[in-house]
Image (cartoon, rainbow, N blue to C red; front, side, top):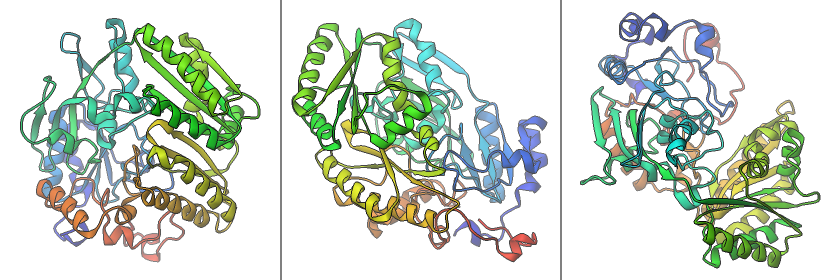
Length: 494
């Protein structure tokens, strides 16, 4: 039974006295202007003001809040730093938004066991900062790593530029303390490298808050490599850059990262941060190599030769930390930078096999030309994780619809070529209705059975990840009108 059909559900306002008893006066936000601060995550096209916002400071408080929601039939939505790009933390108008940003203690840096124990609100990069004096760092590095939280990384199974060599969040989580949808606090795994039995950690990481809330995370620490070198190589075409990627991987070189940007993305980055990439480049390739010094030195020469053979007209090599930061400056700013060249844009996320990169990029160019919608391409070329940025003017009638159509067709291309509708941004609300493009009815039913085995009432982050009639019956994108009953306060649209 869905929450919409559950007539016994309690309005979140009725829970406020009990929520304040759990989290304190300053840990419960009821004022509309305060609640509106949390109406969306990094995907701003989807907005909903939460019924009430709670900011717990401990696992016990999280468990008590979730237990109360479970007992009263009130939905809850977990939220970290709010940097997600799939509306996975979109609030529920009649629910509780459970924000873990106050739970930001690094509990332990365990050098002997090469792991760290942290609360979910800890920023991704802060783990590396804490581990660096010991010669270690935390490998998963989303572009938002300065601000995104570990709890959100766990929920979305975040990746980053260096996931080619080091893997995604799921490859770095050893243990979790989790509050289940019924409010029970359980421990999965621990400091050991592996745990016996079913891979419950693997099931929880990437579940987008639909299976509960992480309150404590044990993550791997990776030893800082002896040497790191970053190369920036410029090409006269995307095909030539893609050929270089295939050559590098084909020769058995495994860089820690291979990133690519097209001319439009470079234009945006130059306008935003003056990254000084080679003039006239139709594509730039960022290749980072790390490991033992002798191995890295040999690979640098190999990569330079392979890029030249593929048609590179300029390759720069940065070995020091400051020089490497300059090379990465344009890439790390790419998503925000396109705001300099377009009033609005859709950040897309899909995956294709590396061997299909050139074909899919050509098809995206054709889609852009046919629709008149510009597309800036920024992507993790090494593992085929595309991040096309679909640009449009949201003041122009019909522009959103055309941009959304191009965006959806790009995902179709990914699936058509044996890829996926998402690589690291998650499904959330944004792609829930696109799941049938990748999975059949039996697959989706199996997913739903597993989800409901842990959350039979459907209170944990409802209407996310899996398609539902209520969600998919609505027109995607920006809500264009308001029902008269909603405007008069007699009903809630969600």
